[in-house]
Image (cartoon, rainbow over the protein chains, first blue to last red):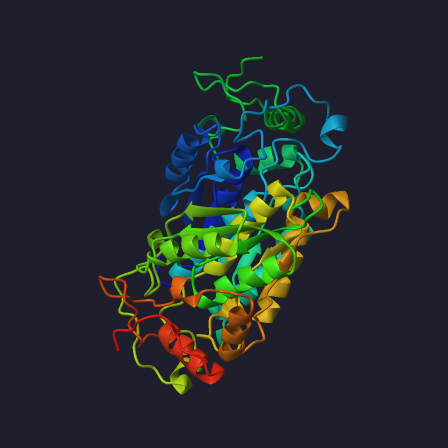
Amino acid sequence: MTSDTPRAVCLLSGGLDSSTCLASAIHDGFECYAISFDYGQKHKLELDAAARVAASLGAKRHLVVKIDLRMFGGSALTDDIAVPKGRSSVEMGRGIPVTYVPARNTIFLSFALAWAEVIKASDIFIGVNAIDYSGYPDCRPEYIEAFEKMASLATKAGVEGETSIRIRAPLIRLSKAEIVTLGTRLGVDFALTHSCYDPDVNGISCGECDSCQLRLKGFVEAGLTDPLPYAK
Amino acid sequence: MTSDTPRAVCLLSGGLDSSTCLASAIHDGFECYAISFDYGQKHKLELDAAARVAASLGAKRHLVVKIDLRMFGGSALTDDIAVPKGRSSVEMGRGIPVTYVPARNTIFLSFALAWAEVIKASDIFIGVNAIDYSGYPDCRPEYIEAFEKMASLATKAGVEGETSIRIRAPLIRLSKAEIVTLGTRLGVDFALTHSCYDPDVNGISCGECDSCQLRLKGFVEAGLTDPLPYAK
């Protein structure tokens, strides 16, 4: 990497989407600064997956930010609320599920923005997807565009006339199958990733939460086999 | 307070502006949920001021969120960089000073947004001011408007057709003297507040940093006396 290599901050949960998103940023020629959040999620072992993926794909740095979203509550991912299992795609298409964490992507992107400004990164990558997803409001293209606009006014660049930071969501219009195909082509080792909201004590994915179901459907439709073991 | 009383989340640093802003929200009839941040600031004693002010004005709750912005660096408020002293108003008008903390208000507002969504608050109050200020990009009206727009798309309300959360900055176009006058009228006890970026070991304000200078000028122009002691 030379000093001219553009830098990007990449949100990395350790799941299928964010791992493919990181691989995409690296493929585009960015020096990547991966950022993960220890936010009180019950499926904290995704952070181990994030570390494995960051190392495997060659991120320049990997930072884990500790924040506690349990103090606000309101989500099955952080609170003592059951993660829904076995929902059909029709049910997933209806409204916002209890696994939604209020303002989570906004908080994550805000921290990414702070880091990007300090290290002079030109881009922030986020692996959101608005096709095969759980209906979270902060995964939609109009949200990403509004965040980018806000970010351009929030930072020094917005005052000093420099190019402001772009928010890139390369997976936003891809199906889960297309993401699996893209990740495979870019060399993501999906055996290192973790997607399940409710793994068992041994870290085995449940196969029944929205996240597992969307992932499994993606592999099937891509004609590939998910290397992860599942409880069901 | 009845169950119909509207709720607001109010950012509260414990300084002159945010204390007046909280008083303003309470005066407007909101049940107020004050939120402060232990973010690695060197002038951490502002958190004691915030607790005193929240109690004195009658906030319903006061939450202190612990995050560590030192891990990103880049500011005299969090790093081993000297806080500038004795700058003239002309110097303050030139560019963004080293006390700027990258993306700080965006991070603070994002947490406020999460809390607001969970407790069903209709409004978020922030005491930013674009007249007598240090030139921070995230204190300008266009920034606040862009955050509100983003927030309306980030949250459930944006999907489910409910009224989205408003970001209110009642001080944004007031001079510091007008803020002092307003705060006094609304019963803020400025002796409880803290504004200095670089207090001494006994917590006495320096009187020379931008924040002290702007505050002192405000009191002089309002024809009032600042109840705080100053080192100089």
